[in-house]
Image (cartoon, rainbow, N blue to C red; front, side):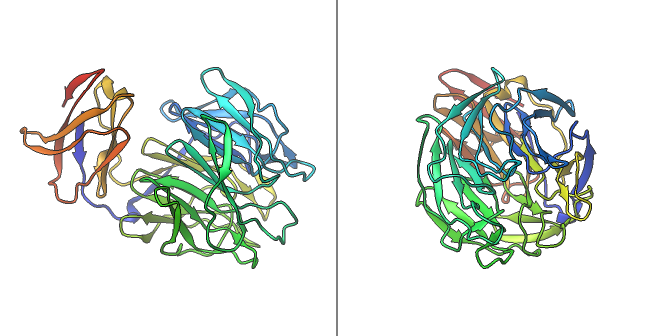
Length: 389
């Protein structure tokens, strides 16, 4: 596996590139990623909530319709992927009924199975993220638009099909926040609180201590229903809405420095309550609802990160991944698809040892002390021994 360590790049070097629109306009859809595809399910258009699901292939830049969601069509639902499956539920339907049912999607069988309902009752507009194969869901709304909003949190274990209480964000109830996971922590950004303020705060959750920490506030205007574009070492948050307008700005967050910087604004129609997803180190977003026109949209855009050029890798990368490749200025993650413990070593192109990793899970390799260039990765485990270059 050939790794190219790239230097730092300006946040302004990010670029939005148009991709194939989804065949149907939607807002309030649920989005999850598994098996290299992004699945967009449900959502609303022209006053109707739909059960259809579409899968986006980033390599072919194409969409394929998948099995319809068999439950009540809905919008602003809870959705995430864990352990190769998609999970979708809760939300609000066309008659403004709040829902608490929960479903599992198997992408191999292209089929849905109902699972344990959310234990705290119906709600919509929650945040969610996944850490170590466990889904975290919190906050939301189950009453009129003026609240009060919910302040609790729960964990879902797909292996046991059980929900348990989780540590809530130590703040007011909120809804319309965006959640994402990155580098072993969960993050929740923005939303609308019980004070009816559209907030700019960001909270980080550490699963080891089961605790939340307030981070540097989002620098744009407070908002609900934004998008989040997650890379391996940083994330972009943008779009969304407040009480009267859609937002189009976008901001890069670096957890290593707990800092924000502006990037070029979203160029599409709107992305309020749209769809955003990351596949590998590629990030996509679009769809959404325009308040001023009451129109839903189907456009899709890729947010291309500086230095993200493709690198040819050996076909054995189903065993070990180095992502992003090329590395960015925060480094890269080594991870393995094998069930057994791996022994992974990193060398310079002339054979000098750099670092090693001998555990399951992932290891963050920092490149801030390494010269730009190409490096080799060697791995050995119970199932495979290989060296690539």
